[in-house]
Image 1 (cartoon, rainbow, N blue to C red):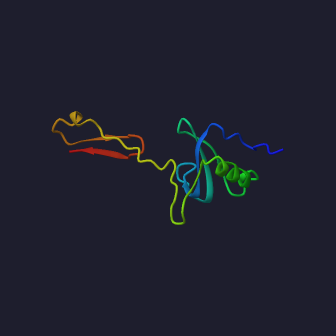
Image 2: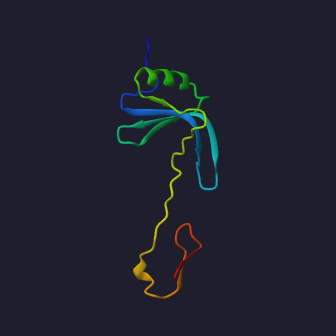
Image 3: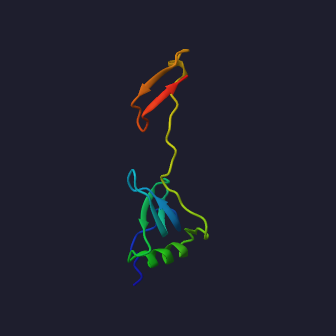
Length: 112
């Protein structure tokens, strides 16, 4: 009986490759041959490292379903490394040079 270890019917596609990851602020990891499953909504549904017991079966299952994309050597996956910055409304400055402290992630914002 060939029962899937993880139901991949709802998986849109999967990517396997070397990955850089920031699990929490201030930490940075490199993960070789990381398997990332993306569902039909475009969300990461599950991830597997190469040492996970289901990993070989998942690769076979996803390949058979035509859902697996493999990165080439020298290509890297950077999920979650997104530039989330904002620009304060220019109407706030009104010709004045002033400083607005304590925006998230910033020590000082300077308008000029």
